[in-house]
Length: 371
Image 1 (spheres, one colour):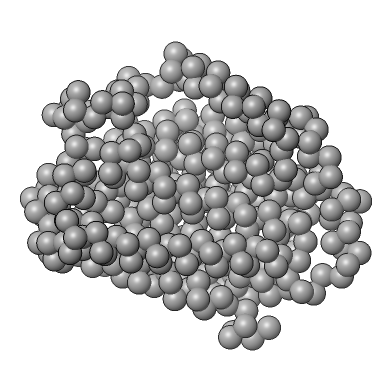
Image 2 (cartoon, rainbow, N blue to C red; image 1 turned 90 degrees about the vertical axis):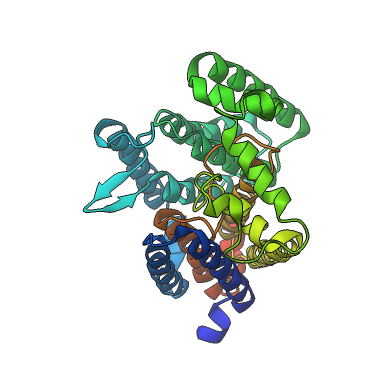
């Protein structure tokens, strides 16, 4: 395949406007801050990686020893975070290398997608066996627990949703779905009693009644909903968002950049943004359908789950429908690690696109039968 056919240009061109509106929104309220220039640099690096990955052959990822090694490396990196990383804003989530920060929990989401895609692709026919749900849950729970201990509740939730989404896609039975639901309820009850910190419990309480403490733990959600609502139909205009410019809106470059965008661009701008995200998800699913084997299909499905989880949770917490969990919105929020992860995932998907029609029938048969 050449450059024209190996890249899904509809997917890529839908991402570009999202990147730009994120930059424009960020530039409208950061003033003399270097965040705009840093974000632009990360965007350029991420796009370069996207194109490099698009021309790689990722069939080696089907090998058990490769995905197992990636999983073990992920576990070790999370343990290293807990042992050696500095506490920043109450969490040990980042490695710092000479002024450059790196958050392992972002690329680890791709590792989980890969190992679940490998696991379920070899057990497609017998997926109804509850044992496979438990084993796959072990992989996810290991990463979930280590990330939760940082504590990074938002990333831990994404890990859980990736596992749940891929289990459902793999063909879980209804009775097992009920079992998963019961396990989730019991897990939440245990986390509430023994895992959640007091501020995390307070966020959930504020979700049920956001106005209980608008000057304290409910402040972020309250100011975010004000920003979104004040944008009305056409918005206040780029650079005229009072909530963000006057610093009423916290974390306006990361967690709440959607609220800052909605204030400046209004309801019409939000609709256009959602259309662009819809195109991205649609093209991911289109490329997933034509995967050469079950592994590629499950990987693409996992990428779709990853993007949808981030989008729904971030927008939900910005408009007061979900608790504030520190989840970024794809391609818009400030930060290099999440951008690299997003473009790496799409780059791998494009690399798989290159050989999607080259796999012989017996390879597909073997993948489904697990031989």
